[in-house]
Length: 137
Image 1: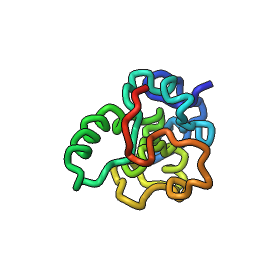
Image 2: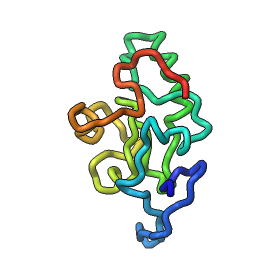
Image 3: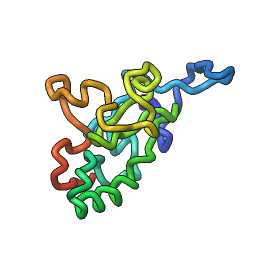
């Protein structure tokens, strides 16, 4: 069962206490966005996330800003999972909750989990790492 997409999936039933209120937990390790399931998790998504290009390439950066409006605000049910700007890849709510990644609104270059920087630990990327041509879903 899909874990936590706020657009289509049901939330997990295990509550967590945060500031005295019950919170919905993200599906943790099972809540992964991949090229194989991205359209199921986010059916309204029309462009794949990709890394933010250097602002020096103004035309490409402008195009990226327009495209990123379609995916930057996507979150999982717990509200913590997001696509990072630096790589265009998914960071799960579990990683944010465990302190392995900052929240989406606190992103800065170098703030992603370490595996975003090490290709040897990755099978596939959701976004396009090289910032090349944008594929549509």
